Length: 536
Image 1 (cartoon, rainbow, N blue to C red):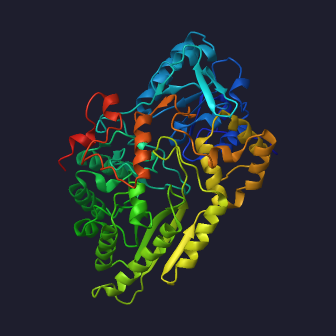
Image 2: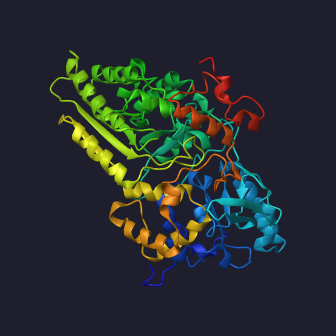
Image 3: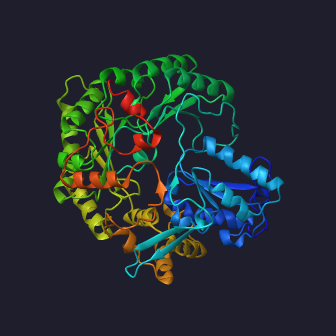
């Protein structure tokens, strides 16, 4: 496109992107940051927000999970939208139209926009740093609020959900109907950012889910439906909901796909429903190889539950099981790593001990091990990441501990995980690093064949930024974190309390058993949905 002087354009209308009033990005993953710069450059839009002048046009906006700490992108965006966009997007568009009619400038529009809850305008916040490099002060300017609160939708049955959308005639990544089942999570796993930034927990009713599924399938012609949520099996009406959906999809010859399942609420009745829609293996997230470590991360899954889940799966005709684990978790020891291999070995032994196991097939236990990345808005946001040398030692230890050919192990590149944590926990000083890395040819960093770790390290060095300051340093409880002026309803005091509880290898019950006092109820003015369903 650059060689032929073709600007980036809209896929359907072919209009140049630079002619749009708003240019929006959904930031799902830290390693996509350089792609934003690349797209702006291809569109002919100035990469730095400060270079776009004061004309009210080309407003560059971002939302998605990564904007819970948007500071490494602050110099490139005009607006970040915190939380859920169904209502705030409309309010922002209405304001834009009104001020455009009045002939307002970009600055005047942004000064009004930042008064809308959920709108964060980074140019209106001034950062100061101490001699130790830690943030000493964040000062709002231009009348911007000192704390920016996220937006949420309270009633999931009334929220707008698109029933007609463009169906591409080319193959895309998520080439299916996606139906949202619930938002938030009751569990409180201490490593999981999504489980906290999407609180409070809210469900759609079975009738709403069924109506949207049927309508979308009829309108699009898709023959596959995916139920989207953090933990679909935590829906309070899971069995009747699946029965109703399966009856419909089976009759219409539509595939129904379910996400990974929890081991503490897996049952034979649930398996019977899953067998009707999933013929391949089952996937579960165990996360830790020992009970001590699972308690540290508040997984609240026992080894008995893990083994019982695998037994139900094997007796139900499955011979392939995939388990997700992490390494580099806080307080982790070599014993915890060896525990992953030991657990996998016991699952293999369990398969062959079952008389009514699937005949004519051997068991296959796949172990996928990710490197732990401490994320903002989690109890582990204060924790350092293991160094690359430590992770490589643990990866080798795990491989050496796996003896059975029935066990297949895969793990992540520690260099990728290191860059991910730096961008996840970084501040505005990383903007220049992201820019320099892009200039050195870094883009599509999440693709192995395009990842240029050496170029990133060159960018850090040339910008005078130490990667270890963000990746391998423990953040203190009382220091100002880059995201402390953003409010996702869960309090920092709660994260500190949970971090201390983790250090004692103690667990916190999930929200339906007991309110943990995370702060959400205070923000929404009453008990959250999970509390109201506590009798389930």
